[in-house]
Length: 315
Image 1: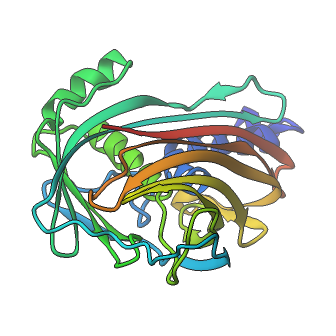
Image 2: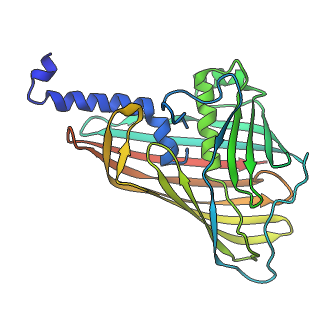
Image 3: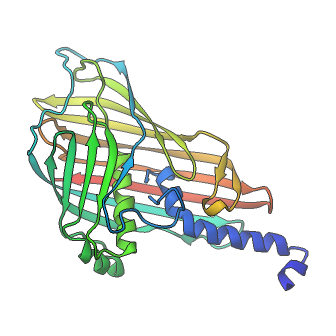
């Protein structure tokens, strides 16, 4: 082949393979990068979850540690809603990612923003969600999402309010593109949620929540929470999020090889308002972003990514 006969052929070919694999597997990696969104089936990195049935995805354990208990009076923070408690809430997610290999022009792999109105109903050990009319600024995705009206999802939760599992059940006629978009949106929400400490705290309290974020790169995520205000059951909590890779190597999707992690910065801030008598946040916005650089030792190709994610809750 002509490409292979060129002295630079293997490098050019390898860069092309990298770009193809990364395009296919980006959402799987994106959950680790963001979030979440952290959003593909880890078995193959290509198909969305929930095709034709409800799928339950376990979420890694969240470990809380109190840094400062805050001022008196102090009390345990625990969800206090009764089974059957209903709440109308809207989740908005935005995920932007730009990628460049060597000196090739940057490419935009961002996914369209989603606005997901939903009815949350508290169960005995979690929250059941019925999705309303989902919207997106992308015309093609917006059209595909019309079939997802009435879809179901849910969160299994611990007594500390940590999400322990994500349940997804899109309507049967929902397309793969719409399913994948919903999946990524909910993964982002999961990894931007908060768990309460296991000891009494008051205003000014600071605690950390440590959690592994799974994806193409396994990440250690640390969320530092500060209880800035308490008014009865309503809590205002400031958040700082940082992520660090657990290893120096990224195993790419589809068994396409590995990349050495040269640089990795992901961090962000936000504020969330929680009512202990309701199953989901009543308001809040958390933005996390950063950049990464990777090197393919086989071809000397360099991959750079810039990522920005935002999760917003409104009633």
